[in-house]
Amino acid sequence: MNHRKIGTDISHRRAILRNMTTSVLENGRVETTVPKAKEVRRQVEKMITLGKKGDLAAYRKAMAYLTDEDVVQKLFKEIAPGYEDRNGGYTRVLKSGFRRGDAAPLAIIELV
Image (cartoon, rainbow, N blue to C red; front, side, top):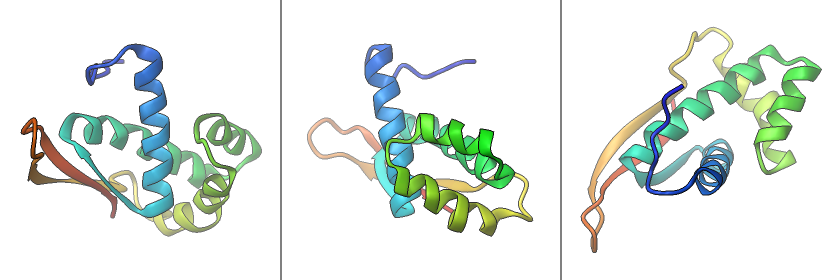
């Protein structure tokens, strides 16, 4: 399992990924830096796959990772059923220029 470091220690990185994964599922899209977007994409895909399984164990795994119970319910009731016929590739990462200030490359991660 190779993870990008994204400039933080492991606990901060884990918190960033959990929060951003929750935000993507809640809002449908988030703007962030390219490395973070690529790392969040992995987690969002895993959560949607759990939602497609739809059993109690998958629900509890999603609850353990995501930070908002309403988002977990939305995932299992609205988002995942929309991807029933799709085998992966639930998100896209679009590069959107550079951040003013530190010129970090920006990207938008959104649900397909």
